Amino acid sequence: MQGLMQDWPLTVDKILNHAQAWHGDREVVSRSVEGPIVRTTYAQIHERAKRVSNVLIGLGMQPGDRVATLAWNTGRHIEAWYGIMGIGAVCHTLNPRLFAEQLVYIINHAEDKVILTDLTFLPILAGIRDQIPGVKHIIVLSDEANLGDQLPGALAYETLIAEASSDAKWGGFDENTAAGLCYTSGTTGNPKGVLYSHRSNFIHTLVTMGSDVLGIKATDTVLPVVPMFHANAWGLAFSAPAVGAKLVMPGQKLDGASVHELLESEGVTFSAAVPTVWQMLLQHLRASKGKLTTLKRVVIGGSAVPESIVRGFRDEFGVDVTHAWGMTETSPLGTQATPNAAIEQMDPEAQLQFKLKQGRPPLGIQLKLVDDEDKDLPHDGHTFGRLKVSGPFVVGQYFKAEGGKILDDEGYFDTGDVATLDEHGFMQITDRAKDVIKSGGEWISSIEIENLAAGHPKAELAAVIGVAHPKWDERPLLLVKLKAGEAAAKEEFLQFLDGKIAKWWMPDDVAFVDDIPLGATGKIDKKLIRDRMKDYVLPTAAAGGSAALAMSPEPKIYAPEPAPAPVAHHDHDDDGAWLHWTPGPDQTLDRTRAEPAEGEAPADAVRPFRRS
Picture 1 (cartoon, rainbow, N blue to C red):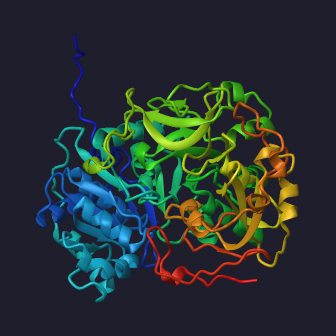
Picture 2: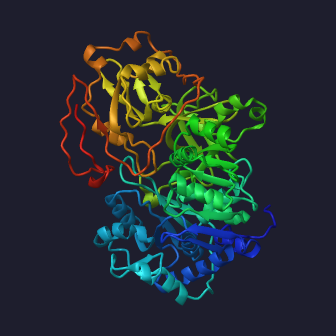
Picture 3: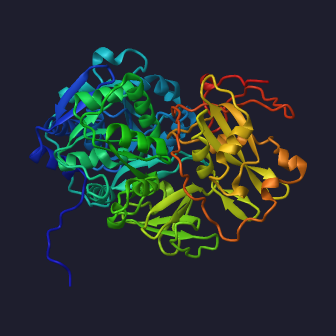
């Protein structure tokens, strides 16, 4: 027997319809790419999004056609999103931080027919225009006066909108219809497309609205610093209008001073971004003696949250920080470190150790840990395992079946992360599977070591990779970018780590580098580091063994105990750069500048190697 309720397809056009009907006068404020602050409302966004739909229909777009956006977080970008998805076309968000070759591959693989772009990215598209023949039209999210002649044949968004009707039919299709397309960052092989459905986006929105997840409400003012091209701005472009929250869109200015200006001038109560952004904001606030008068909560994701950021927001500004984890394949929010009843009863310092974890799954997400033989592992907070996930907004297959079957026999997706799960259901990422260091048959977490090393007062950024060792298979190498004007010996960092990690986790060497490369989403690019350090020989390898490994590691895999002292961390901007390092007296480095390979920075981001 089936229920007798209404058949009401879960399509995302209903989200903006709801915002227009019940929160129509709520503001959407944007720092425009042209410069000025632009104020609009959900009612106006809704009306203009309908015009976008008619513009696209007039250009020949049909349901299922891919329409790309290459744009910052603005009201215009939201209009484009809903205008595309409302007619059953697929909104394909392009990440401008990818290299030109990757963008060309993604655009052609997706078979995009139209691209809507900001003025900022016209040089990128002009440089690849002849390599993307399937794109029939490029629409610039501006007016005729700003269009210029950088991209011949480009169309002005405001002119098209002004000439289009606002009478457009939205929805009316199955809720499993494709709504959005987002590609992975492609750290191994070509990027792969994750094709979201209206249903998956709608359910993800309902889940993130919960108080244990994003928990935003109609009285909030929300600043999504995380870009709409980075895993759907973590769903905020859906959940904010769904509850009628005021939206503040930062455009292209994401530096500490610009973010602080919007936080204060617009009365922001909730924001979300990667650690890099919050580090820049804290640095600006401390230098300018600034205040946070309205901000109550921030969500941090994208990479492990440094303890210094959590403490800085809490102790200096009274702002609560919640850590979140997810990925393109999970739409993206998969877990959030919101306290449960037991943790809430703990003292603040005990709670902090859980805030530094990636958190527990909400309704709709199932997690499990398995070993290399796919056997379930215990949730004891110590045992490492491969993290798998399933749920109604988790990928089931990549676009065009790239990679073949990606689910196990129980329907779980292997995230590629190595993690632990504790008795409270809190998950903690200890590494990417491809980055975990396998030494003497046991696993060492590169993330754990580099987060601790970055707490050294002289360190700006740290990275750890596994380097080949004749006896132990791999041993850790710590790379450190020092703060400007600092000098250090490797013994300082080894002493700093002593007592904070197991003896057999201790790096076999420390290399001081001029820079540490970050990828398109702001994470340390281990693939590029490993490539640059492929000829590096550990001193312990030359000596035939490591004193740190005189004792065999314990048979069971344990993470080190949490560090007793605050762990500082200093992130870097996420424009990416080549790795530079200073060879020691017994090593030489003879690399010449070459054309960047897949995943490397373009030539203008490269500085020559510094030589001793």
